Length: 110
Image 1 (tube, rainbow, N blue to C red):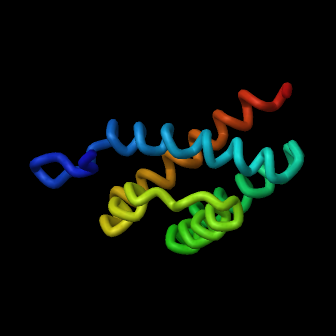
Image 2 (cartoon, helix red, strand yellow):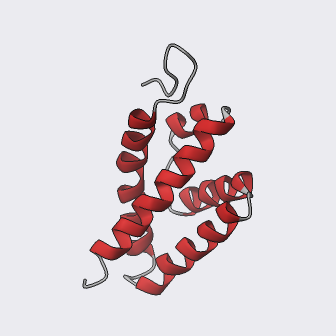
């Protein structure tokens, strides 16, 4: 999957697809590892939101990589690939936060 169009612009659709495909499995694993504690994922969301809003995208990615490792999950190569492009990285992280918010809303009543 390519994350840039032939003209060099970011491909929003493909980045959204990547975020959607990777966010839910990651969050489901985090939920399982926390024993179903909804507060844990909310704190992760708060941390990621703060890092992103402060422009600390690389720190956000570092924390994401750490959490993948703690969960025993391999960090997706596709995410690593697009992170070399600043605009694609930023858009992916924004999409990830949107997907995380959606996931939290969907699981609020669980």
